[in-house]
Image (cartoon, helix red, strand yellow):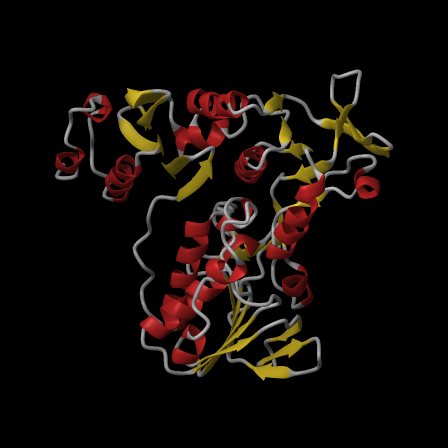
Length: 404
């Protein structure tokens, strides 16, 4: 872009959109900046499946920025508003109430919607999902009348919801046909250990899909794949990922393939429109990170592009999850590893697992050992060679390994 745009409109108040706004102002952008959000106020999604669902935090406590921050940063925040059309050729963004916003550049951070499975009877029994604060509110409201819950999907969201429900006293069945879930993300050995922790907390884990759901006088009858008798529960929660929210982009003629296609600078097929966060897919390799840190970094890259500056230095992908009082972090790509080494003892927290491909470190995952993953991230980002035996030895000073 030859000149810094004077008017920028960001669509979507998730972490990607808010990070774009913050990075623009931090980078000295002094033009007109508008953030359009469909919700009540821009909020952070990770707490929804944990502290917010458990009633330990309220809506104000999960806000991405304090209420006064937008005014202080001279950001026009338009809440409870739907964008119905992008008109990049005219330099306009149209809202549902007919309002049009002038925009030299638009950044789409429209996120996604909770994925649904074609389960017979799902609509009849009112299957719950967890993607938005409204979803979390509905689920929280249903809990007082629910002592038995079925959670479908044992990935990150499903596992966290199951953990929270069990902590609230629900009898939980957690069903997923993968054995074990999350093996690609954390490696099969640790994935099996993590999944087994549900069982130790009283959760009934079942390696099966869902054949059908039916509401009866006893409750919701859930027939799991391979079982002859239905399980009876009061509540069913579906946690099987998300679908990118692309209708706005498609209507504007942007290239879409299970997400808005973007280049390494977050540019879409239209030079006047950028996209960030969960709604995007890389044009180069088709990846769709779908994690909080990736969305934040997308916002920083988009801001750099809009300011005509080099992109921030890339970093290894990183995400975290909390369940049953344990904090899990992952960095890099454990799926690329052909061998692993354990620092400490698997199952005796804190510990960490490092993945190698040949002699090259490709990823790491830890349980209650943030420093191990932080070290691994610096090793990966700096392409610093490291001996697997040294990483596995708990007596090794990890800081010294960073010197190469």
